[in-house]
Image (cartoon, rainbow, N blue to C red; front, top):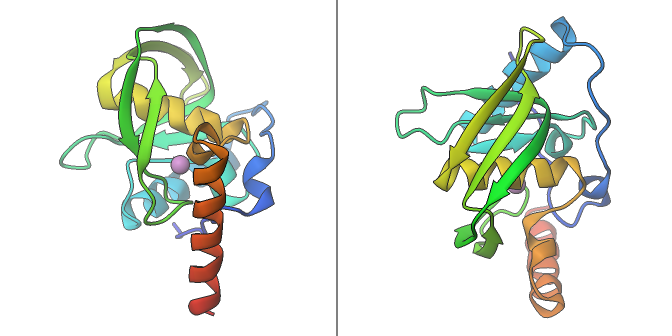
Length: 167
Ligand code: NI
């Protein structure tokens, strides 16, 4: 396994739209394992392939307290979404920045598992929010894209300044 490099906002590669996975093979399973390791090491509760510069529709999520409930979604699609909630979000691609985003309260998502078989999952609360956030990444959307222009500009400046300082 390997820790992968995570792209940081405002890297334009974060705005690429990921392509569907046509076959769940060993390459995809290795990518999922490496993404999970990268997410746990960060540490974070979700990671999309887009964030590690692989533009395929694959996300990993673990919102459990003990970090023992890894969920992998290949070609995930939200089939129903209900209610609304506003909660504070962060992102491994936007380190140190947290802000409120409105999401559906509960969703049903369908996807393929690591065995290539389709499954459906009903999710609510933090899990539902996390899945919506990660699917956004596959569509080239970072959570700050949901914020006002003013906030986006402020975040962009802050991260550019920090990148210069750590060079
Ligand atoms: Ni994110």
